[in-house]
Image (cartoon, rainbow, N blue to C red; front, top):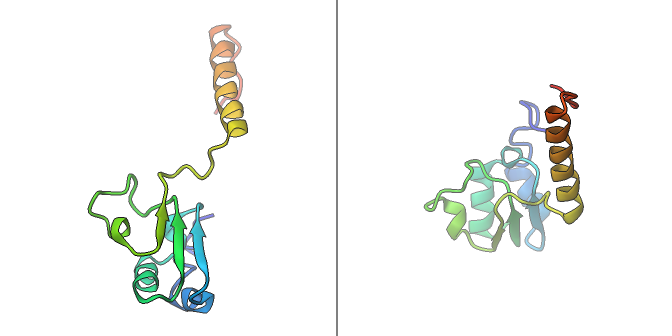
Length: 109
């Protein structure tokens, strides 16, 4: 969860502690990782690489430094995607629409 207490919780000391054989994988919140420290870690070999699907700016701009960062695997913010997840998500959406059309709305906000 991102809060003032967790923003940048992974910074230079943590990335250096991982070591040159370690990979950072972040599919949670981009702001948990200090982006300047991550850039240094990748450029200077503090870590072996990074796998990311969350970014400080989404969608990731074409000229963002991560697009040319060494030893990275980037995906378009879809770490949550699974067949089961889609069945639940879209199944609930269809159920919500049908209930609303019957005049019996469910899962009200």
